[in-house]
Image 1 (cartoon, rainbow, N blue to C red):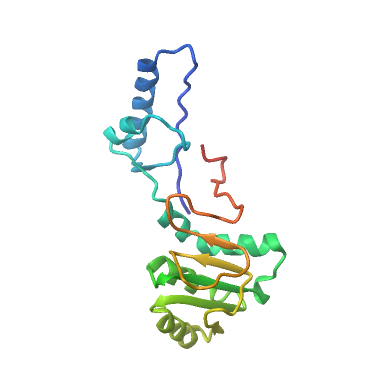
Image 2 (image 1 turned 180 degrees about the vertical axis):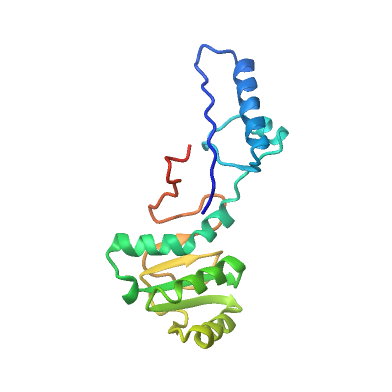
Length: 184
């Protein structure tokens, strides 16, 4: 459900830097006219000042990865050969946030148990899931087939752990790629 546009700027080594910068500037302007506001680049991309001048910002990886948390959890369960209907998924973090709530609501009917290991608002979320869905919600430390961390947490983590926060999220070996091809 995420639209993506891709711009490639050829930059042969024999080109002068000014020519490459003009090409990057044209690509950035094209993206801006197409309605793009956030951009993914290679980690060593040297021309962020050109992109910022065109009004483009880097993609905030926290929100991006946290929105994909339910899909990532299901992918980990599939990779480990764990059937979702027999799995325990732990949601961990310092407090209940909108992405954590969305993940709980999305995963609740798909997995056997949810374990809510959230310091602020965790009990209320567990009670709501029990009342709304009749969900089997476990308390902290119940073990897990996969743990989704939405922020630094003091709780114990079990199974593969996906840390969905910070500038470099840890996705337990998973990569997020668009259907059309690889992210640069």
